[in-house]
Amino acid sequence: MRTVLKGMRAVFDGYTLRSGLDVAVEFGKVVEIGENLKGDEYVILEGKVLYPALVDAHTHLIYAGDRVFELKMRLTGASYLDILKEGGGIRSTVRATVEASDEELISSTLKRIEELKRRGVGAVEIKTGYGISYEQEIRLLKLIHEVSIKTDVIVVPTLLFHVPPEDGDVKGYLKEFFERYEEYAHLIKFVDVFADEGAFGPEETEMILSFYKSKGVPCRLHADEFKPFASRLAAKYGCVSADHLIHTTEENVKALAEAGVMATLCPVTGFFLREGFAPYDLLKEYGVRVALSSDHNPGTAPFLNPFITVLLAVFGYGMTPGEAFAAHTSAAADSLLLNKVGRIEPGSRALMFAMDYTPDELVYRGKVDAVVDFVEL
Ligand SMILES: [Zn+2]
Image 1: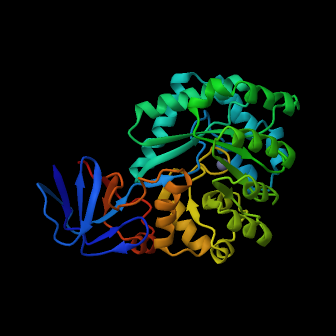
Image 2: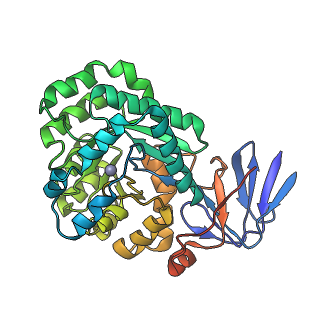
Image 3: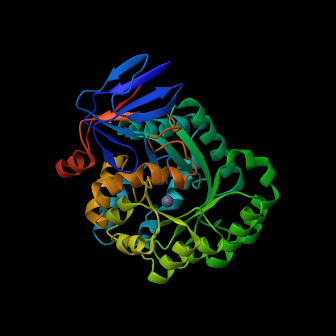
């Protein structure tokens, strides 16, 4: 059965906006894009703009509780340490997550995924990281797997080394993950390290990267969000992506470019923390490929709307709206090693939605509430 989508005023194919084209789909796959295509049946999307599903390449979607009370503290100048003293910060999310039941974690994560899907997200990366102990982190991996079975959104699971254990025995902590690798290897697609001040230092990050690299697991890093050392390690170990990069340097950007590491940027986080934006111009100048993501997490990026991410990427980085959508579709998919989604081209999965706006119109009108209809075939 060949279904042809017709009547669109434009198709954003994951790279650029094109007009006057139909899209033919067979057995869940895009088979042809062209003018006046013939099919066994037709779906008319009169006046709409067709997009590939958006891909959210960096999220911390599985956790319990929220940290609303920190907002005012932060805005009135409280430091990270002040917030910790008041019982806030990442450790409070860890506490809430460890105490939550499996059912609570599954249902709250599914709700967050649904909210992203309402704005066009069809594939999402989910990191662990609020369990910390070996047992709790593996529990989160199993729950992410449960979640992936219960949603039609594609879920990519990542084991995140978020912060070291409170007892300070980092070597012993890592040893347990390394020795028991075979027990959870089937549950992870990526390994990530929060490599920054107050999290994992350069030496520990290298231990983690070299171990998982030896096992053939692709890695990504939280890099240069505060202190700029980790992107050099991302380059050295051939990570797929270095994420955040708010405080990166020209030298680091050059290293990423030379090693072919992508940059997954999280504009909501810099905005929310009032830390500013990663130097997109520099990344572009050196030819580093950029993906966009929500970085959804309860502390520093609680939004669940990819259109806000796009809006902030345009006005914060100076991306064009088309560049921002490409970064949130094809580039984000590549950052997750998903080469059949995030684009509309022969061979790609027919995971697409229609809406009223082109990228320029959506940004110009600030339509972060744009209604999205997934194409059901
Ligand atoms: Zn993150």
